[in-house]
Amino acid sequence: MVDWGWPAQGAGWVDAAFMVIRLIGAGHT
View 1 (cartoon, rainbow, N blue to C red):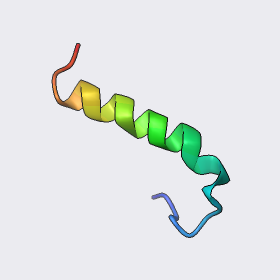
View 2 (view 1 turned 30 degrees about the vertical axis):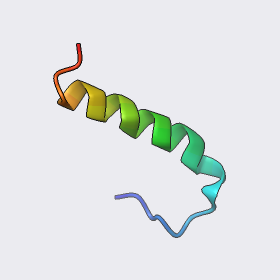
View 3 (view 1 turned 180 degrees about the horizontal axis):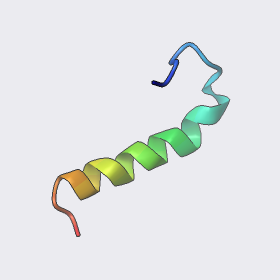
View 4 (view 1 turned 45 degrees about the vertical axis):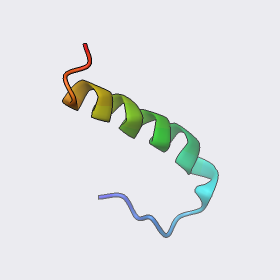
């Protein structure tokens, strides 16, 4: 699980990673 209480410094790559996962999950191949 991700602790969203952490500093936003790491949110950059996390946001990008989730975006890719969402695209794949949406069937965007």
